[in-house]
Amino acid sequence: MAEDLRDVPADEYWRRFRDMVGGDSGLLTYRYLGRKTAMLHGQPYDTMRIRRDMRAPSGAIMAAPLAIASAEAGGFSDVDTVPAPVTAALHILDDGRGVDEIAMRRVPIHTGRNIGFSQSEIVDAADPSRVLAISYGIGIKLADTPPGFEPLDLPPEIRDSPALPPLTQVFGAAKRPEGQWALPAMTPENMSTSGSLHLGPIHIVLEAAATELATRHAGPDAIRVEDWTVMFVARGTDGPFIVDGAASTGNYGRIACRLSLRDQGRDNRIVASALGVFRALT
Image (cartoon, rainbow, N blue to C red):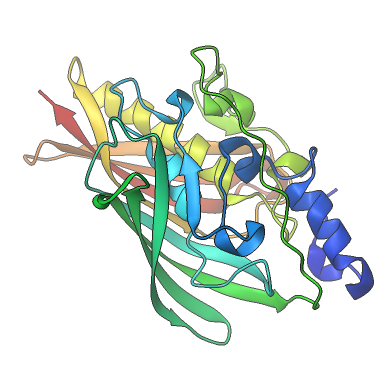
């Protein structure tokens, strides 16, 4: 069922792109989280409002929304390429309490012919001197796009409310009876422009599994995520997608959670590998 926009005729490309990325039944990640970008929406800079469903029980902003907001792709953009992430990493400096909206301050590194390296400061949009995290990553260009791009409509505003479901529920992630976190088989809402599992649900399900592992090791202590790295190893095309993980501790008071996401419909091949580092708060 996966549709790869690289296979779409040039004269249909932007209509199909708009349906896939900006339509009501298309990609859920940016539409539901409300990410607004300079490239796709013609905004002055990239921003995203922070709701309570993007926060951990401690009140800190979770890693997955930050990684989705920055969406490092090596400097490549949907406006003129079909991009794909290779690695995405976050060093979190501030828990973001009291922050209503974040902004991404892009710091170019190098964008080559087919591979690029990018970095961003994620800041409080109301006080840009408050840096919440440093985001960086590597991306590749899969193809060029035809001319004719027009800015997308802004995503709908989802009002903050205690009734908002967890992001895992929205994206279909759930625990199996045997205890593994999993995503369902591919749907248009979780599909990237190259017809593979999008980075959004990948970050969300991996962080859910990592947080559970870290909580188990921390015992009664509260935890916070400080570092988050995901390597996008292969295209996820079928599903269901299952998470395996393990945790290690040392004398720094930190818990390192290593995870892999596998595509059960493709002989259990690894789609993504992640490392989340948490600190136990005593």
